Structure formats: C-alpha cells, structure tokens
Image (cartoon, rainbow, N blue to C red; front, side):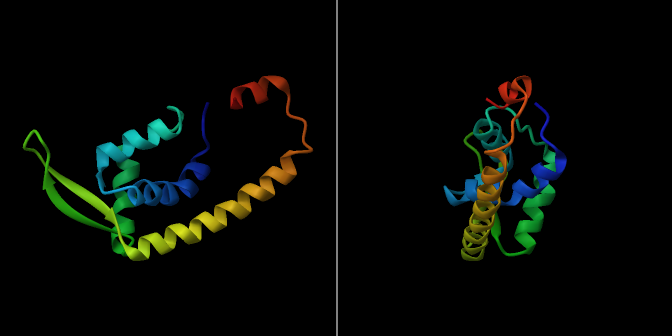
Length: 120
C-alpha cells in the first residue's frame, strides 16, 4: 500500500516525538521503529528522517548527544525535551480531533470491498 506523502509528512513529527517519549534513540533505530509500528507499510529514508530531527532540535523539542555503540561506532542519540513533550501532547490532541472527525465521516461511507480489504 502506498501512503500519500502529505499524510507521511503530517504524521512524522508526532511519530518521532512519540518514539522518543519512550526513551532516547538514534536515527537507524527510529527508522526501524517506524517500520515496525506501521507493519512495514511506512518505510522512511535517512533523507526524510534527519532533516526532521534537525528541525525538531532547532525547535528545542529534541536534544542530541554523541554516544558510542557497542561496536565502538559514534552515534548521535536523540532525546525528547520538556518542550518536545508539550508539543507531543498538543499534537496528540490535534490528531484525536482529526481521527474522530474522520471516523464520523467514514462510518457512513461505503468503501468498495477490494479497497477495504487493502486497509486490513
């Protein structure tokens, strides 16, 4: 299934902040977690993630520190800040409103079976 780029872009910030709310992480692990959470249907690239992380860092929502992996490689680790937690709470409220509105609209819409089966 293809997920529209506008929907991916709109969901990127709350996804990353939500992942980081569970604990600090690094780029590859964030990409892997998004893939897991979406059942493999969202496959982000480095080119999408790192500009987002840098923007979140500029906004003060995440902070980055350098660490070393078990294999001895340097990695940049990202952690959510208090401002990031507040932004996440705000995004959660916004998405709840959107999800509720969509649910109300879609409950009366008949989706052709072949399309609906692709959503399951």
